[in-house]
Image 1 (tube, rainbow, N blue to C red):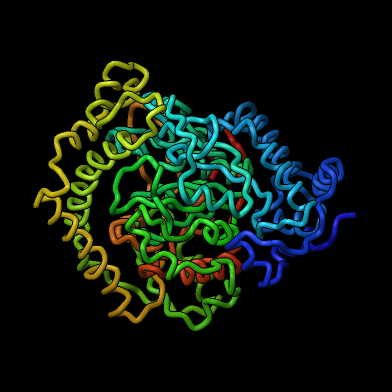
Image 2: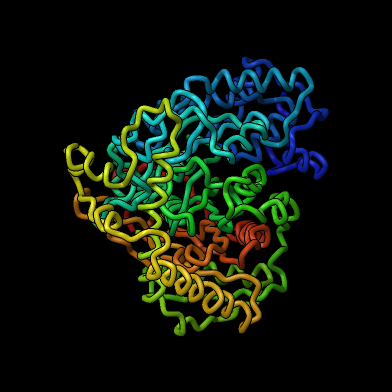
Length: 543
């Protein structure tokens, strides 16, 4: 009979075991059941889609679930929901050894080896992130369809060491949405167009489209996205899940197809803040070959610890209001923050020169895209069958490949290819100025002059219609720009439904304040309970 903890407790494991997640360890946990018994327990619950990552952790800890049954259930759901059924196009491919990984982890538990809280839990990776095995890392492009590097990004190695099953790769906006101003988010030549599970004709945003949709549709309990500016938080917001962009430098970026070494970072996506915090705890840490992470070991912690339902009590929360189509939902969310004990402080952001920040950011991205892409392509293993060595080579490939340019051009690639090098004074000044205006003269000034500990804003408007060839039609403001340029942590949590579609509430903190941001987001989540499961409606629900 299944233990009650799995049914009722969202998370019931003691702190001593929690810290075991950070390093491989042996611990006394219940031995895993047979796969037949675990399947029966899942059937008693009703479906894998009903369980959060933390509840799956409980199930393995209690000895009522095992990794093989969990992994098998997700593979079946991917086949039924993603490949068939609504055909979401969220998952590009699954690893052929996923079940073997799971069985090996179950065998470790039977032998008394416990890697920590994530032992046996499957996860999906955005397909610009390298992972050992036969799957290519494509960034959604046919130019990289054979990019089998057989190496783990350092944070992926950390996830494996923590005991996670690397389940597969998710679709994305091709090249992480840096190819064209007319791109349609969620489309790639490799994976097609990702569909929003709340309304199948609506956009999933990007560029971590598949990761967000996979979580929302319960094709996995957690996924990894990447963000340069909004690529974790926007898809998380419009698909009604939790997404977290960490402080740039908390997580290694090595072996990820790049855009910008100034702004790129990987980040976890899941259905709850606690789930995201669990994954981040395994991801974070210094990498000697990524200089941005040199201080990560000094700041990383167990992020799922001390979240606290009452964490907002007595906290001064800065509020950025902006014209948007979801004002009523935002006001309800602010009321929930007050209900949780927060003091709301309206923020005057009129002094922030967003236009100047944006112009500087764009120059930085163009310059770093050209340089960083060349470094990535030229750093591929010698036996990788990728002839392209520069951005110019990718541009030439696209021109010779009709499927790549069928829906939109490569105007940003072409502009970036004309950029000067990383020693160009114009580039250096653009980075210095945009960073200062977004950070010290922007967010830091808001924090300091208003004595607030966290800043909240609406993450996004509701999802727009997907119209291939006509670009994106964003329906609301984006909260991603300032924390993206400054490199500060940014969390989005479901705050409600607007026009029958999800919208998110953003929590923005100071540099290295990742744990604080997660604590406050969790406290809001507990009082708001705003997440809604997707309906897979063909079109927008009636208002």
